[in-house]
Image (cartoon, rainbow, N blue to C red; front, side, top):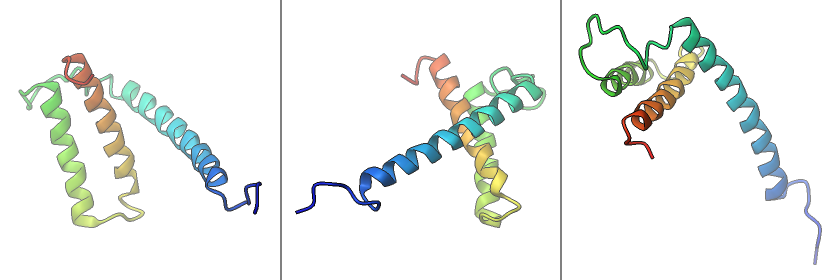
Length: 104
């Protein structure tokens, strides 16, 4: 009977995955903050030139566009950034729902 974990143990794999998660989340955080500043917080405070709906419906419309791009083109080198955009829109959606009191 072995009492020590081997290098293929679930604990080691979880530790490696957790480290990758931390790195990816930091990269995404930096990207989202930078984009939010570049776009002047326009997802949460849109100028509403064309879209007259609320913030949540505006974000959902953008998600539809991004998901449509993936559906049409697939995940390729040309669309990999779309995945980051989708994650960013989902985070903004959570923020918008919290602001409306629906995202607890």
